[in-house]
Image (cartoon, rainbow, N blue to C red; front, top):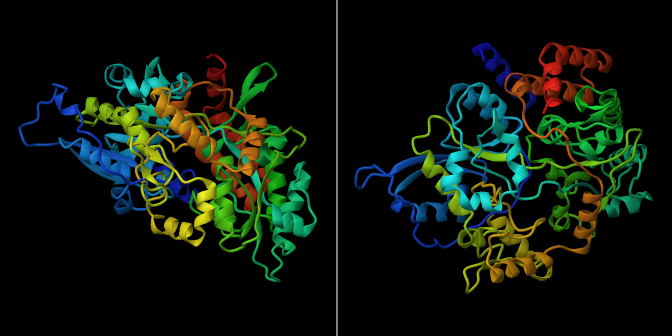
Amino acid sequence: MSAQSRFTRRQALKLMGVGTFSAYLAACAAPAGQSDMADSGDSDMPSGEKKAISISHIGGGSVEASEKSQRMMLLRANFPDIEFENRWVSYAAYLDKIPVQIASGDLADLQFCNAFNDIPLMMENQILIETGPLLEQYGQNILAVTPEGAWASTVYDGMQYAVTHNIYDLNIWCSQYRGDWLESLGLGIPETIDEYGEVLRAFTNSDPDGNGQDDTYGRLLYNSVRFDDDFFHAFGVAVGHHLNGFWRQRDGQLALDWVQPGMKDALAWMSSVWADGGFHPDSISIPLGQKDNAFRGGIAGNVYTAWSAVDFAQDQIRTVAPEATVVAGPAPEGPGGRGYTGEGWPWCFVIPTTAEYPDDCVRVIDWFFTPEIASQIICEGVLGVTNKGLNENGWCVEYTPEEKKAMGDEWSQKQNEVQDINVFWGLWLTIGTLGGVQPFPTFPADMKKHFEDMLAAKYSEESLAAQVISQEYLKITEKPRPVAADKEHWPGLQTRFGEFISQAVAGTIDLDQGWSEWLDFFEKNGGPLLTQQVNEI
């Protein structure tokens, strides 16, 4: 890849104002037992000197907050022979920064990234090492808990390039509404895309909170229209979360949704809602990770987010609107059907060719997946503050919804106390907090039951109803893994498409002209080759 092409991608990403994903809660604990890594027998470090390993991740609201997290403190305490460099990156800055890192080759030894967006560019620049043999030798705990299908997106030329993939469930998305706003306006939960549009317009223009002020909106989009697939599936297409792409069968072959006529129709519908004020005006420019804030702050009446976020969202909204209710609804039906996009396993860590200690990098991640450590960090919240801490067995314990409710204002104070840590658990790993999926299959029976019981008591009836809706309308892209053309052509196609759809929704480009130019770009920049290779898998 030429220097000019790298610079163009960097410029385009900056213009798009991109970042990454939503927020979860973190932890802060006592160290576990001494790691046996120093006894592995392959260290040639002089006595008293430490190996240096850098970790790039998006956990915590700052480097300082990340350092206070349970995960980071456990890591440092258990590997005294390693000097860890904490390369924290803010959620909002991630997608702007990583192409620069790739172009310069300045990746961390353990580099957090998106398998669909970032690894094709890394592979084109030839800066990653193969990890398959390392996982077989040093990653047995990782392999034991990771679904086999998770690895497919990081296989190139028959070789594996990821150290680990997210093992938590990301097929969790659904539309949620302010139930009290719908009731005040005499509206039901929308079933069709036209009804959806009317609800969004009413939330903006009809004073749903009854305060006489022009201070509400239908929805805050998720930056550059990268996530809002509940709208798109109504037209038989999808963007795919984080512009990951969405492929489905058409006329006997797999085709990318981005070039189908329904995509243009979906953008036209969204543009009309935008023109009528149904979307918050900051939707295109707001940093990623902040779209839920408008919903939770009582400003927007609709959000497309995880079913597991219902209880948290309602608690947050009630700090400004005590009678607020949150309800989930079905995917809106349109001429192309309906659906919510599942993400699969996009998030991973890779090791660049510049890493001095790749064996140790794999051991470090594998250590987090051991039952002893996972049972301390899998709980939602900061240890001893927004969860109960560790029990007599050394397993973490969460508060139940009833216990949180009983604390009242004290619970809100606890959350505020540690809010800077409560972003991707303080140190982002590929282990999620308890929820959505069962505990690790490697947990001993008593440990597993402890977390299964906790999970059973974790969610309200409203959340569980949202889970059912999320799964009922779930759709998954049919492209199974990367192809050779992804390395050269996907980053450019992705950047150009993201730019086009943002302009189309905001009405800053003529839709017919923009659509024609996008199709021409796709044809001339690897689109047909990509399609051919996907169908040859």
